[in-house]
Amino acid sequence: MSNPQSTKVSRRRVLKGIGTTVAGAAATTLPLANAQAAESKVPRWGMVMDLRKCIGCRACTVACKAENNVSLGRFRTVIQEKTWGTFPNTKRVYLPLMCNHCEGNQKDKVPPCVKECPEYPGKRLTYETPDGKKIRYRGGATYKRPDGLILMDKDLCIGCGKCIDACPYGVRSFDPFVKAGKKPDKQAVDKCTMCAHLIDNGQAPACVTTCQGRARIFGDLNDPDSEVSKLVKEHNLDQNRLLLDKETDPRVYYIDPDNVLATAYQQQSEKGNLDHYVDQIP
Image 1 (tube, rainbow, N blue to C red):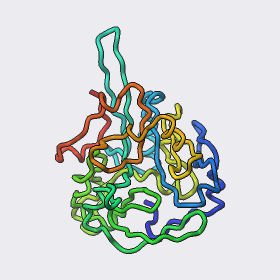
Image 2 (tube, one colour):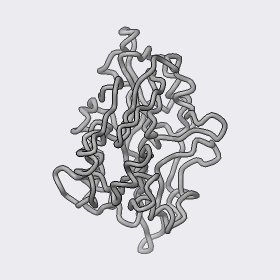
Image 3 (cartoon, helix red, strand yellow):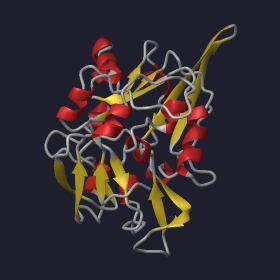
């Protein structure tokens, strides 16, 4: 878990992160195409899933578990798989899912999982931009960092599960092997952090680094020259996000020429099922 007390990304680290993600690289750096643009304001991290390239290998799932020490039987990113048609005219599609690191609704810019956390807002934390500007924000068991990442402090978690119920995507779950910091008799909640510890070190998330087909593209949405910004604009991806009717403003976009979002995505709407976030193979 990254240290929530202070987040500092030095100029040296940002400069080190300039470049394009190379498939199969052991330590892929952040795809920041314009260092000056990246340093002029706070980054707003996002990810594009290119469904034309996803082959369902699940290297992303394995890399995520290895990098973040995800507990046995639990996942932070999964692949939903669906096959339809009649032989020999059949088709199989894959839909990668993870925490959408939502911006929140237009009114308060607070995602529902953060809003429902009893420990939010907590004490004041400090985020330092690449150009040295310090921004104060509120922490909590679940909280939103100024760069848009939705993170957790399990030491503050009380294991109530309200954030699980509040998430419309079903991407949060109780970790049976980790105790809630404030109530050790309960389980802590776990989810994707987009590998914040790697981002703070000038690297891309583990799932992006490991994707051999480059089906996952990560970068700064505030930088118009970043690959993610160009893809969002080129493919008009603002409409290609999950559950837009929930007004969560997610930061995960999909290049989806076959309309997979409408045919393969299955919302886990029953609260009793939200803590079973698993690979789904119908």
